[in-house]
Amino acid sequence: MNMPYVDVKVTVWERYFYSDECDIKTLIPGEDMYPCMDDHTQFTHSETLYDTVEQLSYEDNGNQSTIEIYDDNGTQLWTNEPIEIKRDNKIDTIIEKK
Image (tube, rainbow, N blue to C red; front, side, top):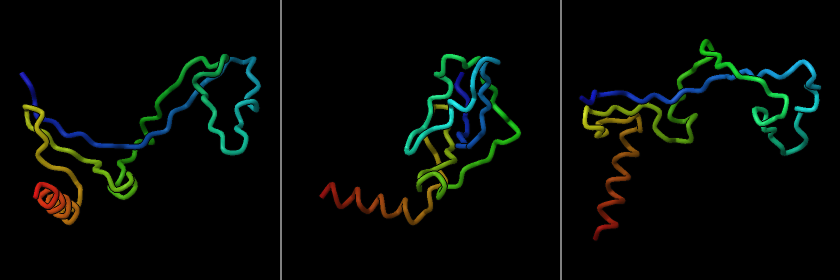
């Protein structure tokens, strides 16, 4: 039996732990570099900091929906995309079909 559901996009902090032998300063990235911290040889485990969960706004998500409501068949019923964007997308689709 399927159930209706709501998907909500959030941001959350994670904490990565390393062995005592790790020189944590080696994880400080250089210019234009993002370290692959959980791929480090002395990485031991991580913890999701659930008390830092924050819902993303439509704008903070690059103008992509952050709330989506689905029925029990998995059909999307609604998103928090602004109505003006939905309208413009429908108009563009109609024009493209002609």
